[in-house]
Every structure is written in structure tokens, then in C-alpha cells.
Length: 379
Image (cartoon, rainbow, N blue to C red; front, side, top):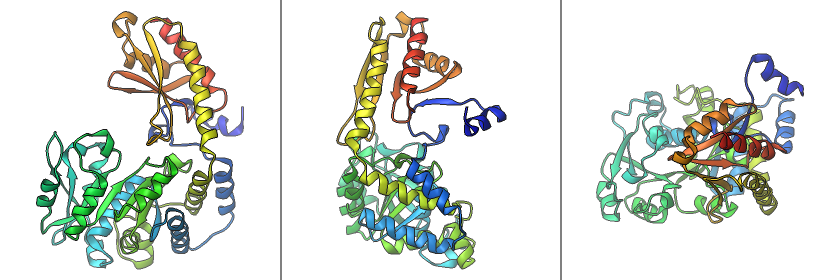
């Protein structure tokens, strides 16, 4: 057992086989050798953080073809700082006033059908969420009419464009917003494949785009903010570097990053954009085949691969069960997998099981196959 593995055992922490994907709960991702090497190299020297943020931001902007970029402590932080920047600009008095937004434009419009777990990012810097439309969707007329004197911006959930029929497209939202002189900020956390999607989103006309670096093979604790130079600059004034550089009491002081993390994000983004994705996806297909074969003869169990090549960066195995025949619900099966040895974490979504293979390590597909078979056979 390696020294790195031993530290978990020493602390009494149970290691997990991650078949859930790049989730925050399990640490996000495992760094590639190139990212780890860049982090180790960056650790050898002290550097001015303001310069680190500026130069890495420009490197990111060059890769994504945007005016500016900025590394943040996660996609959620990118959204918070982006919204803060939209509301305050570079005004030190307004920056210090947050999250009290009295006297500022503070409303962010969001299509009602796109409401989701992470829209909490609006209220963190003091913004007010305003729902537009209803459960059936949102029309262009409704969105246009909702823009008023207190509208700071429009918040767009990129995944919701296809996940929630009836929502307006990003193109339409940008058109309406800009006709009213209002910026659009986009949560594009995992919208990273095909790789052209990243640049397509960045050049959609939206003013700010936010990505999560854990999906790129970088840190669980980092993200990317990219877009208009003035708004990214305003976001940086609200960041931890802004707090120390401008002595402005910004709310982003707690969203601190190490120099190693910032460099690692740049290297991870470069690596992702240059990667042989056919090889990456073939590895996932092979792992799924291993697991599927182990379940093939089990009654009341069906396994099939789900992958949208136009939108999904990862393949996933969908395991459909007959709970009545098995005597176990998918939630119970997932719990047994988690509590077993080895501990295997899978997704449970609307009473169905999903196995993500992109975060498995070499040989773990066989362990997942064995544990799934054991638990399903004992049902």
C-alpha cells in the first residue's frame, strides 16, 4: 500500500471506489500526471498572486477565445463572483457593501423551469432571484417583460436548455438581454464536451461563462470564469486577491486559491482541449462492457449504455431493476454497495441506478462488476 493510501487508513477514513463521476462528495477528480507535475513545480516558488491570476486568466482567455478569464474556487464561486461583479463593477464602496445590495440593481432573472439546486449562488452575494415563466416553460415575451429597472442580469443554466423542454435557448436569452442592455451569466459547469462546446458557449454572446475544473481533471476546489473583460475584472475586484490588493473588504476573501491550484487549472484545461477523446471514450466503453457482461445473466436486471455524443463528456451505465422481484429498491442496493468492502459509490436518480466509469481507476471496473453482481444476486 502506498504512503498516500496509508494516510487515509491512518486517519480512519474509508476509501471509496468512485462510480458516481466527478462529484464534490468524493473529492471531484484525480489529477493527471501533467497537472500533478505542474502543481509540484509551482509549489517550489512564491509568486505574486495578483500576477498569477492575471497571467493565467489571459492564458485561459486565449484557449477559450474570450476577452478575459479568471480561476475561481469552484464553479459556484465563479457564479457568485461574476454576479457580484455585475452588481458592483469596480466601485469599492459597493464591493464593501455586499451582500447588502441596497441601492444597486440586484435582480437576476431565471426561467422558472430551470430552477435547480445550485441557483443559491444568486443570493450569496446579495442578489434576488426572480422567476420568469411557469412550469410549462418561458416565452420570449415573458422574459422581455420581466426585465425592469432593478434587473442586474439574466442567469442561464446551460444544461437546462436540453434537460427542460419549454425553456428559451441561450441564443434567444442573449438576444433579449442585450436588447435591454442586460448581461447574461451562464452556469456551464460540466459543458465541456465536445470540446468545441466550450468555445461555442464562450462565443455565444453571453457575457460571463462559468466552468467547473473538476470535470477537466483539475481540482475539486477550482473553477473558471470567462467572458467580458470589464465584468471579469469586476469579479476579480470582488475576489480574495481584490481584498488584499485593493483593501476593499470584498466578499470573496474566503474564496482563496493556492498558486498550485491556479496553475493546475490552466494545465488541465490545455490538456483537455488537446486530449485524444476517442481513446478516452473507448476506455469508458471497455469498462462498461466489463460490468455489463457480469450482469448479463441476472434476472430482473437490465444494463444499457447511455451517452449523448453531442452533449455528454462521459458514458454511463444505466441499470434498470425490478424492485418487487428483487425485494430491494435501487436505493437499498446503492447503500449495500457503499457499505460493503470495497465501498462502491453509484448514483441513484429517480429510483434508478447509474454507474459512472470515467472516475474508475485501472482494474476497478472488475471490482464494481463483482460487487454489483454480489448485491443483485443476494436480492
